[in-house]
Length: 168
Image (cartoon, rainbow, N blue to C red; front, top):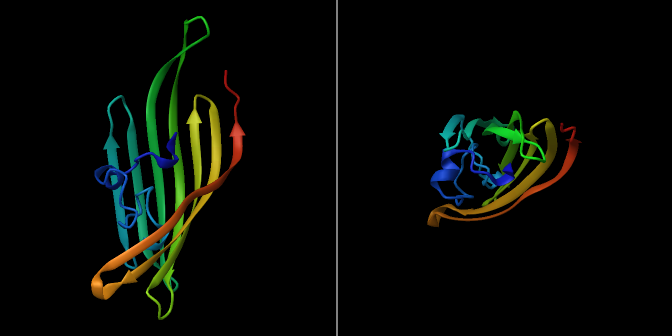
């Protein structure tokens, strides 16, 4: 389910827009936008039907640029299982978990910033687990005098790295 699920209050409040709004909790962010100062962010969302999203992210100076580390967790609830003849079986859960690291820096003497992020993502349903790894990259042209920013980013270029489909 969840490569593009709204997992933070920032994503939810912007309705999916905001690629240039810098938040380590956003799943929809240009990797070049990380902040240079230290910042810790958290988010907790409780959707109807027992769906819960919990996130934490930190941004920090790193070498000549800035970095961020974020942890995302969303639980889709507990479900009643049924077999092929509509008889109740055991209950099961579904959830997604991911860890993302990002790095960005400015180009010397140019108003351009580049960024790269990578993420390990696990999606679970019943006893089945799928693991993915993906990268995203982006750039931002920033003209400070006119407060103009133009961003370009490509997201979720990835590959499934493990699939455990042992389901009862």
